[in-house]
Length: 308
Image (cartoon, rainbow, N blue to C red; front, side, top):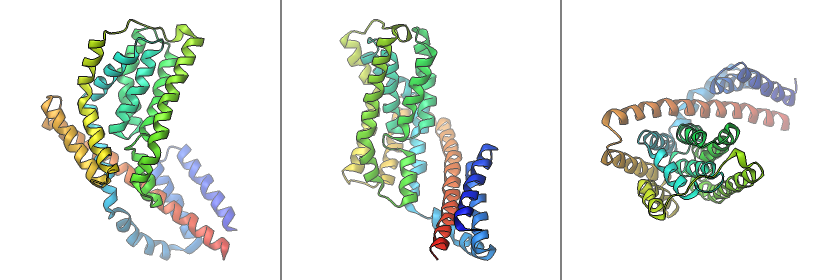
């Protein structure tokens, strides 16, 4: 069997296992290990696994993943998402389709301290979707807005996906963050413009409602000062070279936790629960990283065999 045929079979088996709902990490590890055995045998696979697990997780850069996840967990528990949506709605809500636009802006702001699309879409959905329904927005516009806005969590720094990509490809995390900032802002602007055009064509999908006085709009910004503080401190410090991404994530966790305690929206019990949830999410991500690494090694062996 040729190396090309083996690689095609590996990909097909991987997709089949995922379709059968096997965990992605386990599916990649099983297929990768199987390909490794077919190409090199059991003993080389055993020799690789003996050191690969330690070598893969001993990296200091991996510390940034649980730290950013913990920052997002604390932000979710302290109710920052509602304050972000309230402020966005105060400035954009009076336009036709303004609640949907405010949802996109809220997803971008929450994603900037969360780094996860799933957390962004889930959290903002609980806050924004009921408001859009209450003001007569169609379910299609509401769901579509949050589905699109949720993707901003993996694009706007600090993105956990960008961090994982940087670690797997041995790229600089700071450079990836810088590279994703402008596309992320353009995506936010593009989503808002698309909503504006859509509600002009179908006015019944996103009705306008009364705006707030300028005093109320300015007052709404007082509820998200801590978001701006964390964003500036973390990303500004990373971009400015003041500290590394891992150190920046540590600063973010401390700031967001202190804010929660000062505002009495976070307790010791709540913080402990955030740590437990972070541990579970981190374990899942690390398992995926190892499975992907084993799968990539098997594909690399195929490439080497093909050249030989």
